[in-house]
Length: 243
Image 1 (cartoon, rainbow, N blue to C red):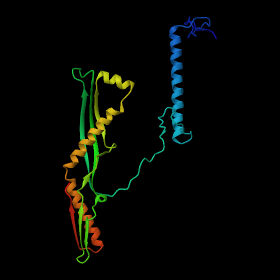
Image 2: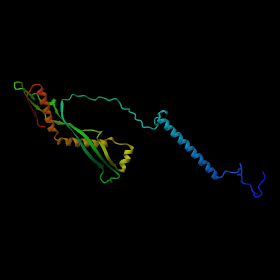
Image 3: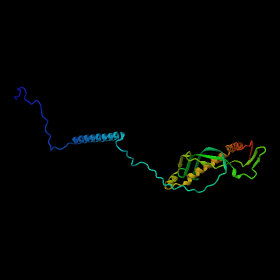
Image 4: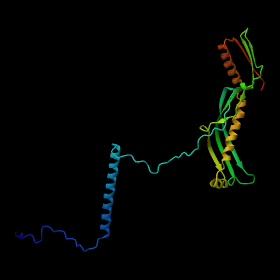
């Protein structure tokens, strides 16, 4: 085709063919790496989404966490140490709570070096009972003619407080620098035992002035009156010895 006389140049220019031997510029290298990174991320995200989708419809099996916590119980069988018969009637019990603030330090030594302070909340139960095994020979007097009974019982006693470890806990604990270092090499179980023992003693002492003895007397008397009334006795007199 003949060219127009008014046009001396071609209507378009073809791009130059790149030279295969020309070196790759840093800009071209970065652009290629970015495209590869985006493509890899897209493929990975697509695979993860596919796995979650298949797991949601229960197509893939369930795999356990290889780093999950494991608990191994190597406890020995329970050994029966003793058994005894009890002749006591538990007539009342009380649940008490005490806050123990125990601090142990040394004189003339700064607290930041040697100091151990434990704030412990202890919950325990104390029982009030009457020991029928301690009855004397003349404790029971029966009058069949009048259908009456006279009982002389020992005074109610109280048990030592039994701590409920499910409801007892350490609120806070402060330790000096040397105490922390010592605990790092070996903790002494007796340190916690002292806190437990103090809480037990406080609860046992508080139960003595709680009025449980009087309640135990009343409950024991009502129990005996109901028991002997079923046997046909109309009058039941219960007397408690002095503690």
